[in-house]
Length: 228
Image 1 (cartoon, helix red, strand yellow):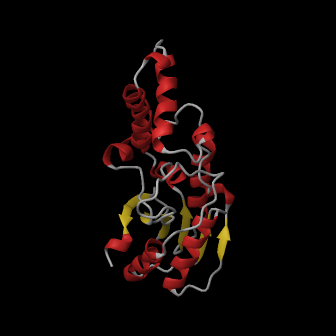
Image 2 (cartoon, one colour):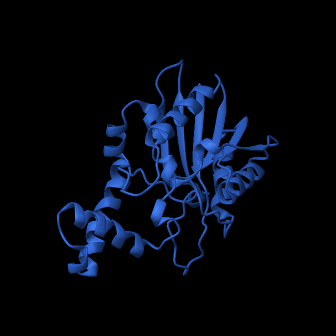
């Protein structure tokens, strides 16, 4: 059996801080270790020992992978892999969600033939929220974001093909990129209908393939640190 574990990095904002939409161009440190270590402890509890560990080349993903490896007692190095770096949120990079919603709301209003300046802030935010809902439900990319969907999907397929028979491979990435990983199951629409594709920080996803068959999602977005 082949096993592919995909995990999201830990928290980059402390409780009480105003979070921003952190993408590929915003390289933040982790602010806690619990969720990252929880990934390693959870895999250890399941008896899964990755023979390779990859991580997107950002501080938050690399550090998460290193902390998970420590808890696994795994001597293999964490290898940076730019294929799985977070998406680029374009004009919304490192902006608060309120700011993001209003910009996206203005775009949506213009598409509907409305004047954004004539709409109240709450209406703009509502329109913006609809765009984010589509992103979270079916990975429909909002206008202005720099996301090469086909390339990201291809990267996940390539990674799945690289897993050897009997191997378990761990890849630490980010929320925007991870939501495209279920394409390896062959039925993304069905997956989206059955799952919340937004993976929480420290969330663990496990895919397996038996005898060369299609990849099956065994676990998705598991908050490992809460199960220990």
